[in-house]
Image 1: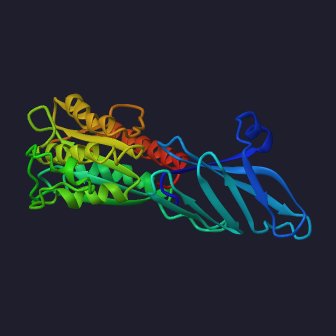
Image 2: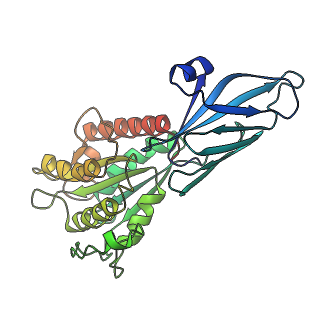
Length: 297
């Protein structure tokens, strides 16, 4: 898995236009020619990695090559399998094991904030999941019913610890945060209670959101989507409240062909909302498309 790494192939002419010419190449004693460069860039970073794509005139396969880009302090080695040491602040290491390596499956985790484990909210999430799974994306539905989660106590310990966890460990907040970190996409789902989201989802937003901010926006560039089940009113307000979490967390939010909401009071009643089924299916399709465009996180 390449983490938050983007990959582009640039022809050498484009590199020259960008002023990226201060690098040296050392071959393994074979006559080689370079037609293009692979440019790897850490998302959210100004630094880049440049790997030469070299082809041997004798075998047509990449020979061992070393490349160095002096001013950026980067060093790379290629042995058919690329190992890229990336060190802007001495924090990241990635391996790119050729084009034949299978990508790790992407994953979306959904948090159902309903007091009903398998009510209308969960039904709507599963409609989204059906489309994600068709696209080969793993899914997990985390049911918050019966699980204790308290609101943020404003201790600010997360800003001191910076360990990607909430300092309060007496409930399921950190379990949820770890699932968010491990996922490529996050769905927050809530029924409408008094024209807004449920207290458990609100507590999760406050705890995960503050921990993310304290750790440099650790959820940024993940994909997020809101799902709302309502009896009658308040769905738009609840939808808006859920989206606040995604936007302040610097996440990417796909749209659907309508607002992501369905209507029904008793468990199963949302099944009668054919328009909601279509909206959730379109949301799942668009979420899958976006995840595939962004690549595995």
